[in-house]
Length: 242
Length: 245
Image 1: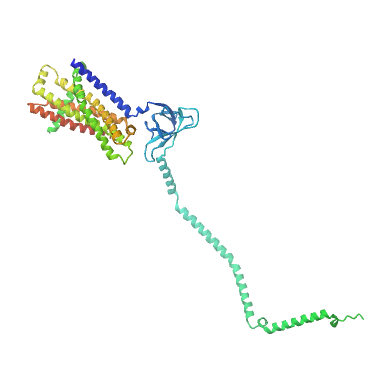
Image 2: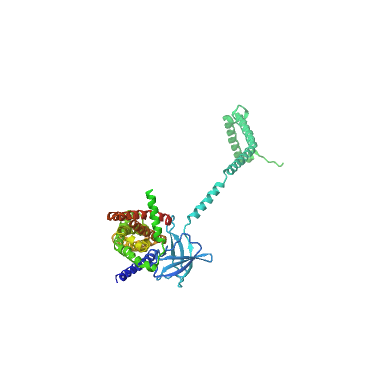
């Protein structure tokens, strides 16, 4: 009798251990919260970084989890367990995002569409910032910079300078003839000025007040004469036919 | 020299106890008895200790983490610590303290009172009759005790965080499940098989080694606990290296 009771206790102990193991397994793998969910199939081209158990956010609230992955026809089929109360319109947008730029943690973001029809199969986009690809792009850019040769720039600048030099030379050459002509003109002007300033006839004529007064007097006398002629023409002009 | 010969003797003893022809029909009664002694006998102490392990881990982790990292990391830290390390090792140390000493004392007394000689005279292999059921019983009991201890510790840790640390159970649970790898749970359980093997073998080995009287029986019980505890920690390191390294 005692042995039977002992065996019963041992049986209970073993069964309790196994049951608690199953409960612990279900608890720790996050399957308890998957009870009130339905499966949504999403096809992605690339799911790098996504793990089973990563959260599914609807309006920023966690409303499901990633359940499993499968490769199907060159695409990755991700099965999401989504809360039964959340029905997804067929034009909903499903994307994979990073929790942070540096971390490897991902989440799935669902933006609800406006269609009246609900769907359970979607095509998603991986919108995570691929830091590695970014670094590779920078690397190729750096390589382009490295392959750019500074001597080419030097040559171009030299050529440019020689061109400019040549042009300036041509310009100065073409300026030479007009300059000579202007010089000659200036020399002539100088001689004329000297003539006017000197003691010659022209200079005297220009400077003489006497001549000016004489011319003025003559002018006045001439005006008087003309007026007199106009007044008394017969005094001066006598026309005789016979 | 002495140490090496003792290690050799220990290994030979383990081999003789395990690799021995035996029949489940004749041995199962004694295996049940050992599961009862080791498993059910250790259950109360394991439950109490695991509860306090969970509480202490939560308090200490929150003291070190809260304020500098998101609160859900409390759940992941406590969870992984308990599942990977504290659950298996503390269970093994408790079982070693409780059972390795009792096995050594029991078998040592049988040795001193010449009951083992009597078994041999009756053509009953003492290794099969005494060691094997103890080893199998302990190896069966250890993972079950460890699972119960882990569940207990996490439950108490989560409840403490919920009621006293202002970390809701849902947040604790998020951290616990989000950063959990199934390898952690199975890695911890794999350890317990080896711990069970070491505890029972040390208990039986030091019992069989007794020569003399009551004083030697007491000393063998002490040795059994000391050696099994040391072996538990060495094996813990080696298995961690293989599974998590």
